[in-house]
Image (tube, rainbow over all chains, first blue to last red; front, side, top):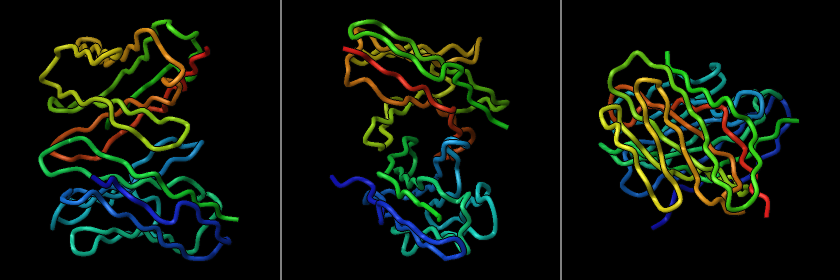
Length: 113
Length: 115
């Protein structure tokens, strides 16, 4: 079946602009995660949604970052007033409830100029 | 806090050699899960294996094998008879607590297999 999809695949934005990154999880997966991959920091957890529970936002680096998940499916990660240090690949993953493997999407490469 | 250490950063081997990728983890939780992911040059992370803290049985899948030792907090990954297609970055990861917990990743090991 279809895997996790993310859009756009690449995004170039100017410093100070807001950006929205989208994730479509695998159908039927109730858990959805956002991670960030950068050369300096490696792979970092950002936020996690599980069903109707309150999201785990413990990895968000600042209040400029937020995410929502509508209807238990699609998720949008929003970065406000982007900074150059936000440049990274943003990865989305999903997993079935009661299972532990996370399946990753291809990522969105964000470049802040 | 949890931590995953992959001390090897880059490994280069010639095709058909065996190679072992090391992973050492730290956690105070008694229930945890360990994972290996592969990131080929295309960029997408590919799930390879999951192991829970109560199952120390080693696993073999084709040319891949995993050695989990709680006594040394290690979860090492061996590729037998490596192939060029094995060239990728390999990440070890840890999750603790309940279902679907967030992953803590190691820094990754870049494996290059030369023909």
